[in-house]
Structures are given as C-alpha cells and as structure tokens.
Amino acid sequence: MATTIATLTQKTDGSLEGFFATIWVNAPIAIVPNASKSSEEAPDYRIIHRKTGFEIGAGWNRIARL
Image (tube, rainbow, N blue to C red; front, side, top):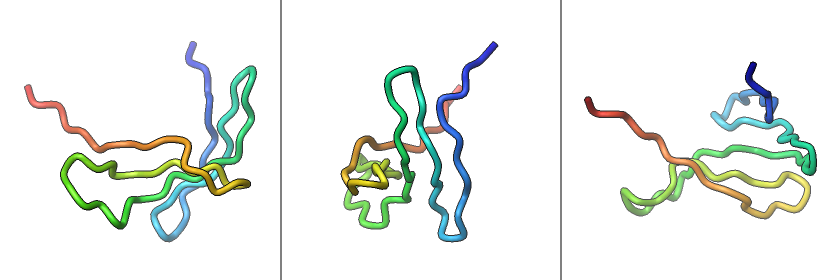
C-alpha cells in the first residue's frame, strides 16, 4: 500500500497547488514551472512554500532511455 504525501490541484497557468503532509510536516506548497530556465541543468520546476514564498525544492523532467 502506497502512502499519499501530497494532494495537489492543477491550475490553469500550469502550476500545481496543495499540501505536502508527513508525520512531522504539513506545508502548503506550489509546484511552479521554471520560466527562467537558463541552462539544461536548471530545474524544470520550483517547489515553493506558499505561506513564506521560500523555495523548498526543485524538480526535473527526465525520460528513461532503454
């Protein structure tokens, strides 16, 4: 059985908003596309804490090559 750690809703601008929740953490977050991606190594998404506005993570699109 898998555990759900985030409940997100997609917005019309392509971002996702919701809550990240574990035993010790319950944080309102937004996953926002990185519009200012300056290089191939830069993240595709930024994870923002919605109350403080601080970036708390990042994400990259990856495609497995077999």
